[in-house]
Amino acid sequence: MSQPVVLKSNPHGINLILDPDMPFTELKKEILKKFEDTDRFFKNVKIGLSFEGRVLSQEQEYEILDLIEKNTSIQVVCIIENDERIDAYYAEKIRAFEDAQAGRTGEFYKGTLRSGQVIECESSIVILGDVNPGAKIIARGNIVILGSLKGNAYAGAAGDESAFVAALDMDPVQIRIGDAIGRSADKGPLSAIKNRKKVMEPQIAIVSEDGILIEPITKGLFK
Amino acid sequence: MSEVIVITSGKGGVGKTTTTANVGTGLAQLDKKVVLIDTDIGLRNLDVVMGLENRIVYNLVDVVEGNCRVKQALIKDKKYPNLCLLPSAQTRDKTSVTPEQMVKLVDELREEFDYILLDCPAGIEQGFQNAIAAADRALVVTTPEVSAIRDADRIIGLLEANDIHNTRLIVNRLRMDMVKRGDMMSIDDVHEILAVDLIGAVPDDEQIVISTNQGEPLVGSDTLAGQAYMNICHRILGEEVPLLDLDSKNGIWSKLAGLFKKN
Image (cartoon, rainbow over all chains, first blue to last red; front, side, top):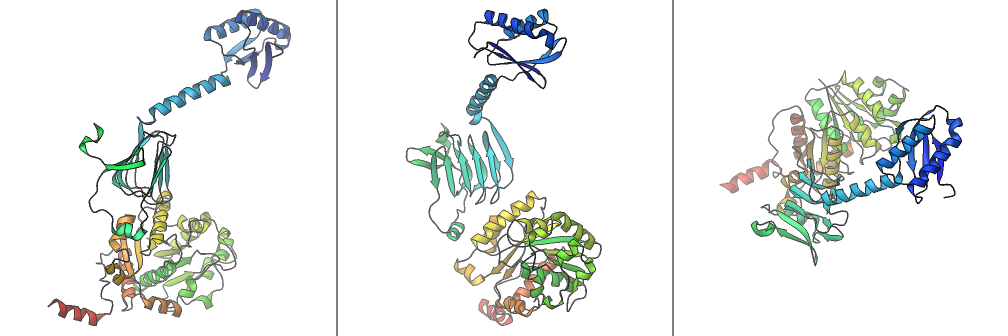
């Protein structure tokens, strides 16, 4: 950066673009100089101030405000946060939090999903109803269906292969968990309808070494 | 109070138009004032099935665009003066009408008729949106084939999304001999997949083809399909009618034969 301190006006006030590497005490001097140079231009204005280019601690922000108020006639009404790196930092943190929570928190959906309907969920999801052929559920976490799964389910959609899909009646067209894909056996649609199980058996689909494994939910399974 | 019923299916060729013609005629036979609206703009054929093609002067698009009054476009049925048809336009397309215009038109017709039946085009695009916009309830027609069932499922989902919840199902072209052999889905199979209440099952009957070709709906006649359609009409009026025994395909003689067999 050619200048350690740059002033840029915006609709709400001014952006103070700061050198990221210069020691803070020196930077303060530069800021003071910059404001003294432009004081006549800014005389008695009320502005919103925002900082760019450098991550400042709260104390440092207060010090700069102090500096401006004591040495110039500018009144800083508020500080507008628009530091991209801070935004990115928070977004990163939030994403990490969501990833960690995806398997643990969940949503509910009540109703049957019919052909063409798609549900996408940032966490795990519990469906109170059937998922018909042609319908699709996509979740970052796990999928639990209190009904028949006859359509498509995609758990661990962000790549988490430890996710699972459980259903009271498991007859899916396709199940995806992370990068693993399992599909139904090649039987004609009519025979699938005619030969459907008479007794519902709760089953769970997980990723094993050989791909997607579907097994009955029994007492010992979760020990 | 008048009721607006859309007859829809998603898939083409399952019998929407035939059902509209027969249910409409049946309701007229039961002394209701009925109007049928063909919303399949560009592919009109309800008028052909009703045998009224030669009477068309104005059509749905003419009414919506203000080229004529609604009364001028309505065609009276040959047999039943309390039955009217509002034909579709053949030289235009679905975009010639908007859902808002349909609602306005139907509201105008509500004042005069007990039942307004909307014959919906196949598909889920603008024609479908036009047809369902004004409907109070829907009859979903399907055949016992997986492709038709899949489309019916999609349609029921779309109807629910559009706040039409009291949907009833018509299973059309049922062949009991094939169901018995396990080569066709039964009514129970269809009902279990779609989870929507049945309002009627219509057998696959060659009499339907004959009646369609003659332009005379067969509802109310002593054919099995004619009885099935009449039963649907009674159920629309809220009466409880048991499901027809579709097995008695050859009429009274096989019934008698069946009696002797049992003994």
